Length: 477
Image (cartoon, rainbow, N blue to C red):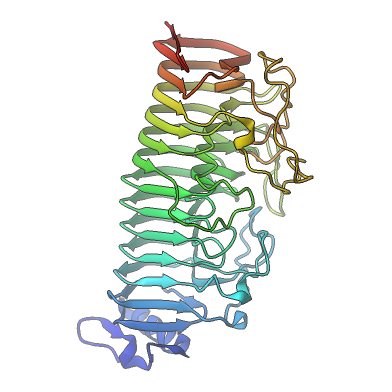
């Protein structure tokens, strides 16, 4: 039943809203009805239990305060959907709770909650990237998208993925994603013209993640005024990086430890693995990226930047080049309570990172012992495979980093080198043109490592660099 104002109230369309009845058909009928002329599907207060819902062009899905859209615990209600767009992520069809393909002018708004029910036992069987676990929201090649003010909780897989979309605005949403593994909070994959603002995201996996699994780059992106928490990376570019990244500006954000007690991440870094994480490893070009005015607390690795040659492949994906990582500026960043894994900026032999500026950045380490890194039994790189091996290496006897392995094809994250790096500040290798301007490094106690290690680096500049190791202070000009 549609009102004269263009609203379809799902309760008047047959939805029970009692959290038990299957309201899929009633909600879908309302979406279809609104799409013809454009309008708003209204969910009044109540709990609406549903399987996959297909968003349509010119529809706003509005969740009133007190309304919850709840995923049902029956996997058969979440069909595998193939969109046939080449992607290293989409080698098999995925499931989703809310799905849209090649739609435009679509919105999800309101002060209600979307809960895909990812903590239910039927969705807990697959820890890896399994297409059997549904995305919370999955929009593919859509245009003019608006997601505002809603809360999203308890996804079975990534909470949101926007793949090769254009003109995307996400504002004022709240995400709490600790119901399952791979609970990324927000993934922007190969999208163009994106604004993310005023959001709060707390997730067990990456909080705010930019990717380019397909042939299109992720470009023209602005992120501002967000509060981010993660047991993995708070802000990440990569790992999927086929199409590359261009013109991304992240500013005015706070990164702090998650409030979640249980850690649904195999590396068990409760305060987070990485603050700013950049991994371009699949042949794409990453260029013209700015991070500014960011406060970071508690992460194991403050800054990670890696150009590699993992070169993930899939049908329809162009042959990878050597890739590029250049023109990245990180400025006005304050990092406190940092963990023992040094910040690193590394290319690989013959492939240099270029034109990096680190300006007005302070890193204060509260923890500086290899024993602070949790023991795990994960990762194909061999890291801690036995469950009793910590990263150690020759960092005290190798101040030039000569024994640090290259591992250019490894999964890019702070522990990729399977060793404690010989620097406590920055480990820099295979880089041309890097500037450290107004940088302060401080350890809570004496650290036997050196503040900087530069290997195969040309055109490095240091200006007003202050180093404090326990009671010892040194200034580099």
